[in-house]
Length: 93
Image (cartoon, rainbow, N blue to C red):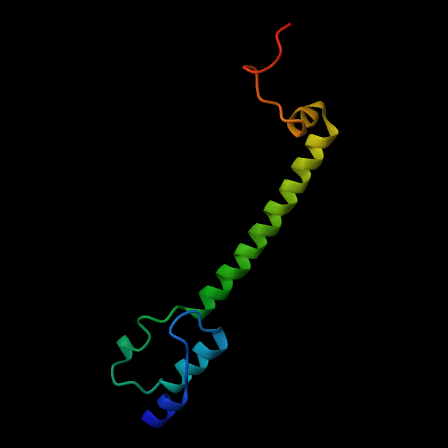
């Protein structure tokens, strides 16, 4: 067992999912199973969170594009693009 652990090298932080899953398979026969993977992240949840973040990013990007197109097509967009500063700095009539 010690020989396997010495040969197998996993970085302390930010290891890939393949390396972590292989490490889990190698250290499966541990004496105390409750403490086996106490400090190792749940790999299934990690990949699900990354997928969800990507989906949210795509939705935000689409909303931003639609918002900018709407601003460009209206008069409010002209003020926004030209640096409108609000009522305080607007010229008096």
